[in-house]
Amino acid sequence: MVDREKLNILFVCMGNICRSPTAEGVFKHLVNTHGLDDMIQVDSAGTHAYHEGEHPDPRACASALEKGYDISKATARKVNERDFEKFTYILPMDNANMSFLQVKSPLMHRDKIELFLNYHPQKTGKEVPDPYYRDSDLFDGVFAMIEEGCWSLLKAMRKRHRL
Image (cartoon, rainbow, N blue to C red; front, top):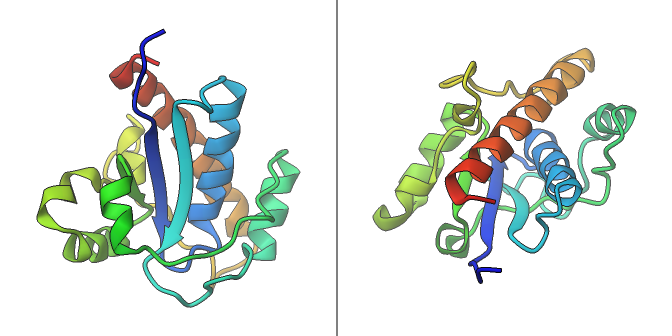
């Protein structure tokens, strides 16, 4: 087997308690299911430290658990300078967080930052809506969008990196 450098994926939203930990949990599950644990590392972070050290929103946890994913152990953290160096892919959930990351990122790492749903052929340029201040029902729709996006991301990565 060819010795490869591990791919590091960072999902990013604002507070790291809804969308990005959901994407982290779903993508980790897919990576594990496909036997790619030794090739892909997954994490999530927020652009702001509003919820640093907290676990995901209970509504996000409930939505994920209904579909067989346990994201309850994730812990919110803020994006830091080392992330721009470490991660191969930095995938914000929306344009506001993408803009924030582009401003904070050193120029040499800006090409790593791309909207998460750009990896989905039918959702390029679309944002994953933030369900935090909205009705609990939106969490299920957001979960479905993230799960679909994660499948598309994995497919694209397998093709690009020959996994």
